[in-house]
Length: 153
Image (tube, rainbow, N blue to C red):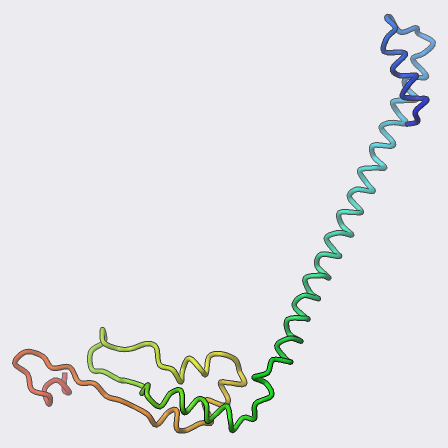
């Protein structure tokens, strides 16, 4: 639609009744406008598709940058031996406790937490025997039972 067509349509809207000889001109304007509308809709659809494609690529690039940042984290510069020693020092006052009561079972134990950070830390934790040799055992005392009975039940 051109400015001339728009002005012409405005002029026609002010006349009543519309002369019959203008119906073909009006029909042509309408067909042109509907074709323009289809073309714009198609172009908008293509642009939306392109935008979605670019957003997906951007998301992938963000994830890639996060992985690269992870690779360059200072902790990755520490030798395995030093990280293993840090694990031992952190866990030395926190034994893995086992108790006789199900409700007393402690589900949080630091060596397991360290081993769940990432596969690299899992390998270090598994291969550091000192983490797994610091064990504690708690016995429940029940009313009227001695320790031996509590062990059996």
